Length: 346
Image 1 (cartoon, rainbow, N blue to C red):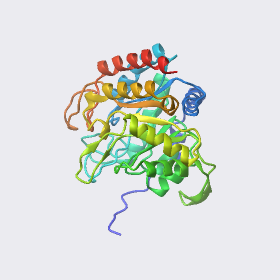
Image 2: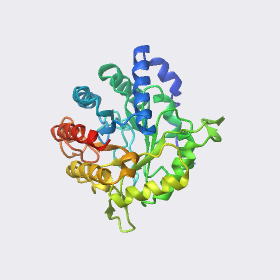
Image 3: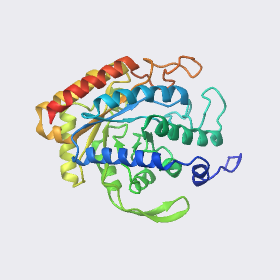
Image 4: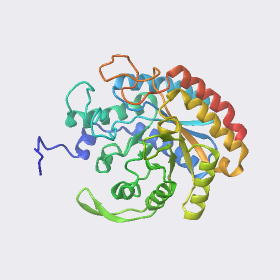
């Protein structure tokens, strides 16, 4: 193989031991976990809102965003459960570009995975201890999940990973909800099969061990739009796509049918400012169809302190260095709007 071993990295357990989660944090996470699971199972009718930056590129900006989000969560807690996006790894379709804090704790520096492992552990710990949020991250590297297993309340499997066997099997072993995005092709059947696979138990190889999973009943769908063979973006948040997903769920026999609609990515063609409109259209579809009022459990919004995006060396505090995001003031207004509208649908 044409690789050079640079150094051995510590096991996740070693880093967790060096940066432990206190008992108070464990209790906070447990309560957050129950709230998310109760929404997905239908025991709680509040809106699940997964919102935050495309990538958490620096801790100070991410924690500033979360502190503002905490104040709003306290105001809308009767209508909305917020789980912040705190994504520390980023898939790159062509292989190049910023791969997230795990790879580059300094976005303008060289890759340093040893510092990155510590940085993402510390970021998620600080999120819990400073803001009371146990956040969402993307399961890009299944074998790294133990590093964050005690601090996350939600995991997403991306469009490029949802067809991968190891991602599906690992999802079946997680004890927190896992959102499975539709693949880039838009094939909803593939997404549903991934959900069914994650909901069942399996025997498989994980971190050089033979393991057996019990299945994850809270694996569910995230609709994020798709691209055709010409690279053109098409949405799948409309009424027809939602009803089609409901039909596929019914035929699959999967437990706890649930959909989260991603307002960005191919649903908006990365036009971040369209996310509030998309959210309104999803709520309108729910208002017109009783099946969708039961199926749609929440929304995913890409949001940060400042509108838009910039290159990694841009220097604007709290502006995305990957996909463009909705700025704070627009995000705050959207949350209040959702809090007012959601109870009328239930």
